[in-house]
Length: 348
Image (cartoon, rainbow, N blue to C red):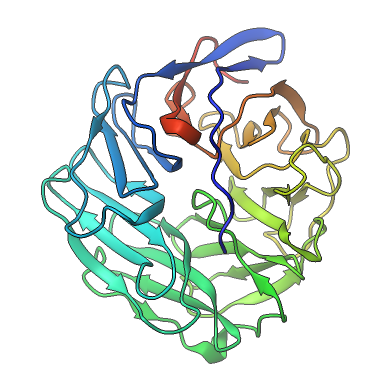
């Protein structure tokens, strides 16, 4: 599902409880709307976005370089990226009529291999995720009435479509959001979840590597094409959170977050304050026992230190996606080439 591009340029300051911490804006030398980010480690991160943009840092963000895009991909919108190392990454573009594609590089972007695409009507990739360097899953808006899912177990050399009979039927007007890859989350070796929106907001889950799926309702705002689940994250097989809302009303904080303690079989609203508006990105800060989440969106950002039960407003700056590799290695990306790295005291 398409969502509008964010263009504002602001600095993001993160307050972790009473200790000041900061997302320090870095020079990307890009004006693209950045939609995907993948933190690999303290020095390495990848970012992706509009106009065939792929960026890489290997020095902690002191410098970002534009990675040459795949041939004939200058017009593609790379909505998601998954970095494996400083040399290996997957990028995913969203779009109709063959514009939804998955590429892989093992040469830091000097060469790209097209791994998967489809001209089938309705095929529109929303997100890609990996359990490890070789086992991954990607999902598309409904094709012939069911969400399309493809999986790989060989590093993307082959992507196999999931049997449509294992996927619950989509509701009329239901789709997913290509918002930085947040709509799809994986955990452990086999578990996966993705969220939907539009006329219906739901959560689909798999415990067998994407071969079969079940679905439950999500308690988020729904009913319009701009509403629903935008991002999920799980700290283990049972504990997770989701964020979303209405991108057409980015400051509205009604029914925009939920938590689960049973692996996604049921969801409930936060017990305390919810995020301050529409949120499209969600990440767990590693090393915090699965309790610290950071959510970002076009109207601001929020922090939870209790597993998503309560949220603290931390800034009003605009970002699209967020990713952490450790307590202090995290990046957020947004419109107009904006990239920021986490600095300062560790989130608790």
